[in-house]
Length: 222
Image (cartoon, rainbow, N blue to C red; front, top):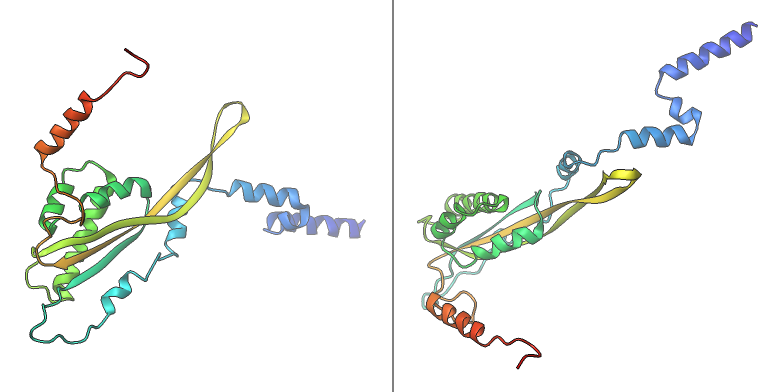
């Protein structure tokens, strides 16, 4: 009887400790793991804090160029900056990144102030940080004498979760992240950023649209 009492006391002590899932069986372990599973964006923030994202873009700031001859055209200063692991869709960020490409810094900041999107605030913050880097580290004399030479984004980490639906069904949810890259260059922006493309005025684009509307035709009609 004393041996049976001692074994019962051992089981009582083990049940109060954290060793029960390992001793009871795989079903209890799976239940404990499922209960601790988190599918919201807070988990992705915790995981993204350990991942700094791509680093090759910032290595361009460390390139040392050879000195130039007096008759050569002076090489404009530039600065590269990035913001990684942004909780935003890369497809949505692409439109805003392309929007400010080729603008001066002042014009880009002014235009982004009127864009009512979450990614616009992130890009505006990245451009302001790049301007501070250009003035403090790269010895750019005038902070307004900069333009957006490159502006693009890439796909970041994607975390998957699920969302419950009716009748015991569930749907898959994707928490997407993106990386934003910008390069500011000293000088005035070019008149036509995209070479080979004619820069059309508003009247020319309106005339083309009106002409395309007039050429419409109902198929299989008289």
